[in-house]
Image (tube, rainbow, N blue to C red; front, side):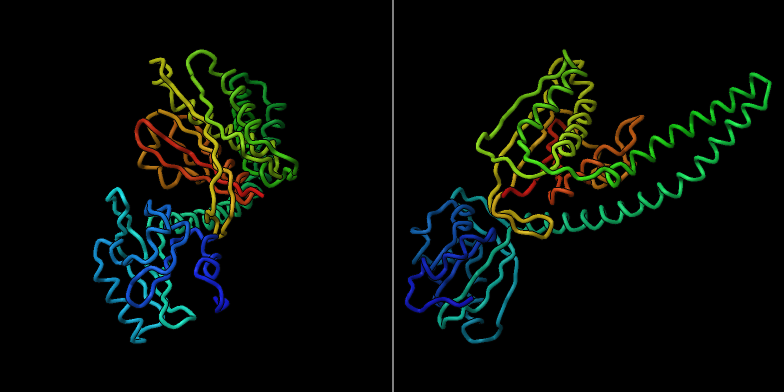
Length: 358
């Protein structure tokens, strides 16, 4: 990245404030020339305090950085990567992946740090995105393959029912017809996201939440408490309102059903929480602003056995569940270039929907 020679550090490195990673520009003696806003937030220290200080003091093992800087100064490498522990003002340690590279100006080095948790999340999102695409193709192909023979089975059972006289045999044909209809409904649900046109309009996420809240409370009117924690500054955005209602409804309905014991005890709770996320990366893209919608419940949590597969089709943690609710929710959110994440422990499950904002 080239900068004008006459510009001061604040102007020369201003673009680094737009990055979600943590950036420090240091001199070869290890003193800080510039720190971006991401690094300020992560360390809990102001830029003015950091500038001029020894950056090595921000790490648990300062000597590692000193060695890396010495190697860069002697041109042993152009870029170096290693893992380290960053010290925050409250003495909390943050694991980061450090990338140290030479600047375009002699005597300066650029140090970029990515929290390892963020890196792991990005890797997980990439795997989920690839898996979702594979699932979509598998579901579509499988549903079409099932559809034709299913119609034949049902038609043959209807013809057979017209020919037989025994009541017992008629009951058997009715079972065949009933099960064929049940499978047909399942196939239609599998194909629904690919058939329905994407109807784009202005969406207010709080109207979506209120609609879902009213539907859920109509089904669970006495033993479920739904709280709102809204950021009213969130702007409207372009999207398919009905798809987002359905996606949110599927998540909330799952939560309400998982709260059966809490509902019986009288302390079942679901929280809608909205926030604006700034400078975030998901689905391999960087976004300046994104909607963050949380659906939080105080239920038993997602079973460990299915935690990594909850968005896969036909995977359910509930007896009698179809395992399609979260799959369809993920599909609808992905059609808005968004992502769904789940953080679950016993007593607290948090489904987070992230959607880019204009």
